[in-house]
Length: 205
Image (cartoon, rainbow, N blue to C red; front, top):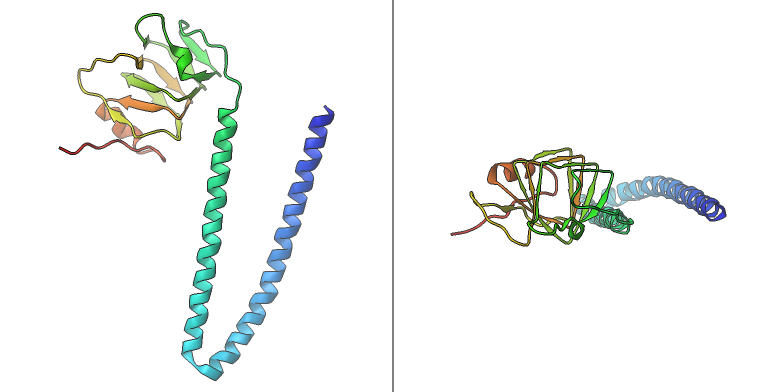
């Protein structure tokens, strides 16, 4: 409990410090901008339009640098969330069960004694953690998300598989796939490709 309270105090202090820094930057930026514009007006009257174009280029460069660091911060935040998910303790999985809810499922834990075919099973609010490959056929996929997955591979019709986990006529509701390669029929892949971060592999003849 003491560790939790110490962590909470550190979090609150960090947030408060960040807010103070942000406020100071806004105040400084406001006063600096006013002085910069006043100085720019003086130079404009003295040197003409060329100096004004120079100011515009400098401002554009500064904005580009700011947006670059913002994007880098967002990327780092996304990677941190991903690593936090991967660090979660996996659930104890019995691959012979028919219903899985609120489970963290490493793909290797779905290995069956013989054929790797899971039929008519329910997966709700589960996280599938790779590395791994899964073929999904005739299944209902709703409210699922996909994090750091490879391009979706199109399954031929008909298809045969070996050494690959297969979900056939299953229900996948509110699940998340992390570092997993998906194999889907063409129609299902086209539907999922509309989601952010999901792409379908293309083949050239």
